[in-house]
Length: 141
Image: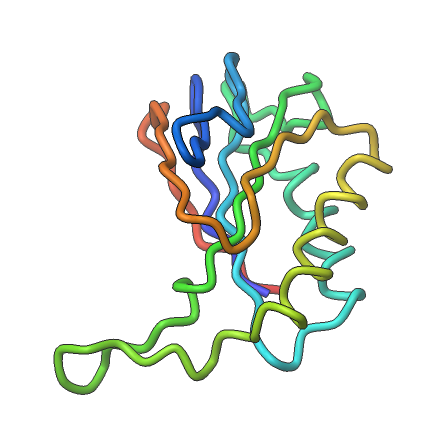
């Protein structure tokens, strides 16, 4: 699994003109991509990493300060643009494989005590954010 993690002061996801997920206080926006070989074990590992990642102000984590996370599925994280001008998506897992694993990350975060908002899997989402720092990390598990 791969995640792009951004420290934000706020972030939201809009689908068809309706806000489906938002954080209105400092926290993390997490874009999550799934590849063919990922398992629930990787989902648990990613959730634990996100919950404990010390990138908030004062080197704090979401678990330290109860900061919210907005988790958005993002198959394009496994796009490959090394050849030509058109990316391929072959490394991205198909929806029936990816959706349960993204849901597992969210469920595990909630089990750890996190306040988690989400996007809508497979929808045309408009993601807005105010990156704080800016801080953006790529996390692979």
